Each structure stands twice: as structure tokens, then as C-alpha cells.
Length: 226
Length: 218
Image 1 (cartoon, rainbow over the protein chains, first blue to last red):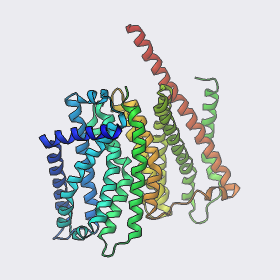
Image 2 (cartoon, one colour):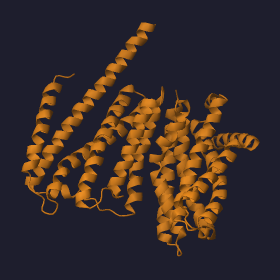
Image 3 (cartoon, helix red, strand yellow):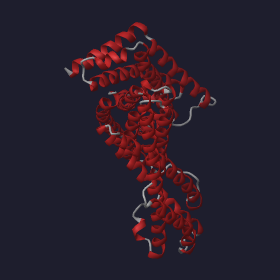
Image 4 (cartoon, rainbow over the protein chains, first blue to last red):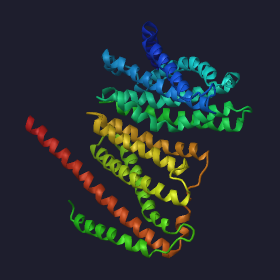
């Protein structure tokens, strides 16, 4: 029942997205523009700052993610479908999980484009040689970011100033994700990968994911009830 | 206001008037000298900052669980005090660090965790102020997430390095140093309680006024 509700919500979001492509294209282009801006600002005489790639990759993900989160729920609000979603005979946490998976899937697509771009423009080709570790760090970090972001974006849907408030509320809370994601990715940029350090950051990210998804599942019900 | 409020306020004023004298008579710390005196304001405000955060977080969880407006008012009052005492902490800290460590700012665990927690408290107030109707639950959710976040901030920043003095220093201080320090803590705690009481009362009156308006409309 729960899994089916999650699947139906996810499928609905993906179908809408496949037909319009609005959020995917805008988010993707925005993320690419971000990387270009960083490259123009920081690359001097063809040399990127040391470890810069890790930080810029995560900033681009956070910025693009904020945009995607805002748009996903804005669409529900504009077409008045949020009420229908809330009235559907599905458990509230299932709505949250469906939305969360949708956002993570969207950001995964963005990351598939971003990583090679960062690797090429910011001298981080070594990232592409360690795809499994990078995928693990990105998956855990993105899930943590989206877990908090989906809840906040959903809660803000009725607020007047939601566009401004989302980053204001979200960024201080995802500081640990940013630190762990950036440090973990920076560890991958070293000539020799230190698996102990990498494992520590990955474990921290996974713990963060578990704690915040659990909390969000509990809060979503209370917050979305009028 | 309750009957104890005015005497307590006078006592609080007298205590704060006395703190400079008490601090002046406290002995000099041998390595840091005069700048150590900042500590007498820094540590108590940091504790009140922490206390405010805890009160706000606990009240928010209770509000989410029960939906009683009383807890929401408590959380709001505590969040405002968190921002005020947090600002005191974040201003006095660098003043001290400049002299003791040689830099205004370090990305040390406590400093970073305090800054991020303070930012969450500010975000909470921004949300309450500009979120519009229905932002109470949202704010409670934010407070809950902010509180749950503190251990993660701690662990993630701790993996760099730490030069902030550990908490274990305080009980080991000599009585001549500890006495003035506890006096300052008591003054700040009293101030915290008074401001908190006043702020909660303001919100209660506001809620009562709203109820009166609503009943007039009917």
C-alpha cells in the first residue's frame, strides 16, 4: 500500500516532467551556468584552485537543487493539485517519499552532466577515474540535501515569500551535508585515496540521511495537516 | 505581570551594575591578562544562547506533537532570546580570540556550530516574521531540524581541528576566579528568565487580543 502510493506519486511527477521537461531543462542549464560562472571567477591562466572542484560541484548542486525544489512544489500550487494530493487516500509520508525520490532522480540527472563538466573545466579528471566512490558520496549527499529540502519546500508552499525563504531556511540546516560532501569529494581528488577518511564522510552522510528522513516522515504529517 | 517580576527586575539590574566591580576584582589570568575578563560575559551569554536553543527546540517538538499554541509562544520567545544571547556570544568571542589566539575568527567546532545554530535561529525569526499565516508549524519543524542538526555540525567540523578551551576548564578554576564567574552566570540567567517571561506574556496578551477581535466580529 505504502510502496504503491509512493510509486504512483513518483510516476505522476516523472510523467509530468517527461512531457514538459521544464524543471529538468531549467535546472540543468542553471547548474551548467553556475559552473561556468565559477570557472570564470576562479580559473586563472588555466589553473583551477586546489580542491576547488569539490566545493564548486557541491555549491552547484545546492543551488540547482534549491531551484528544482521550488519549482516542483510551485507546479503543485499553481494547478491546485496539492489539495488533491493531500486529499488522496494515501498516507502522508508516502507523498513525501514520492516527492523525495523524484527530486533525487532529477538531481542525479543534473549530476551526471555536472561531474564531467567540473572534471574538465576545473582540472579534476581524477574524479572520473573513481566513479563508484564518487557515486556513493553524491548519492548520500544528494539524499540528505533533498530530504531536508523536500520537507521545507512542501511546508513553504503556502507561505507568501517561499522563493526567498527556502534557501534562507535550507542552507544553515544542510551545513553538515556540504562539509561532508565537499571533504569526501576532496579526498577523491588526492593522488592516493584515503579510504578511512572517505569512509568517515560517507558514514556521516548516511547517518544524516537516516536521521533526517525519519524526522521528516514524522514532521510531514504534523506540518501538512491544517 | 506576576508579583515577583518587579523585585526580580530590580535585583537583576543591581546584579548587572555590580558585575563590572566583581569582574574588576577577579584575579588576573597569568597568560592572557586583561583580555581574560571578556570571558566573564562571553561564557554566561554562550550558556544562555544554548539554553534558549534547547527551550525553543523542546517547545517546538511539543507544539508539533500536541498542537497547543502555548508551546508555540514559548518557542518564539526562546528563539528571540537565542538570537540576542547568540549575538553577544559571537561578538565577545572574536574580541577574546583576537588577543588569545591571534585571529578574529577560526573555523573551530564550537565557533562554527554556534554560528550555524545562530543562523538557524535567525532563519526561524525571519520565517515567523515574513512567513505569513500558517508559518507556526513550519517554524516548529525548522527548530526541530535545527536541534537535530547540532550533533552533525559538531562531528563534521570536529574532523578538522579544535582549539577552543574545553568545558572541563570551568570546574577546575580557583574559587577567586570561579566566584565572579558564577555570579555573572546567575545575573545572565536571571536576565534570561525575566526577558523570557516578558516576551511570553506579550504573546499571550496578543493572542487574547486576537480572540477578543474575533469574538467581536461574530
